[in-house]
Image (cartoon, rainbow, N blue to C red; front, side, top):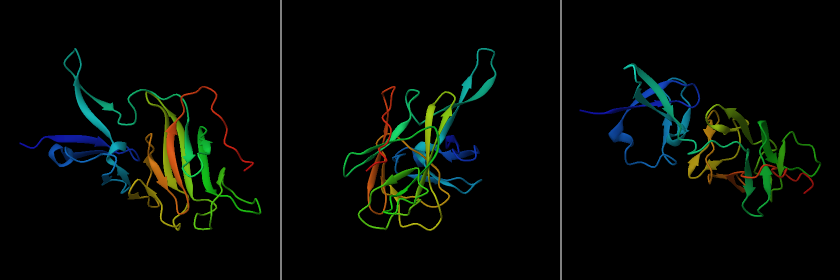
Length: 195
């Protein structure tokens, strides 16, 4: 008999049933699952596993076990430019990441120096939200539909995708690479806009 595992979509919250044998031997940070309800693609690691848990009174309750982190993260993360080590602190709320332009006119909250014009002036969006029981959660998506190819690890990031960033994930932009890290200090150094 096939054992089913219930997964909760990180986008719309729909509960999907999948065969446990189908996902037993795959790397959840590389494999993607497309939700049948909202049609959004996410890494398997971003889905929450729904496990049945019996209470003392005998009722069955559905309880989510988060794949995001082993312990609650109360600090915002940061993106580290791999070529220089420059760190961009992510604040709670929505931040647009894009290429710094010489004229200084950019709608990006985090403007990155790039060797060419392949990265858009507004390329990515990172939204940082406080989620009960999980701490700070960092959601990554493309700013607009038509941008040069962008990857998270080896997986292409497509317009409409919404990923939950995990520590160590590398975002391959057209001209630069950024690595996502969690902050463990209380202060958190602000990103340097003067460069």
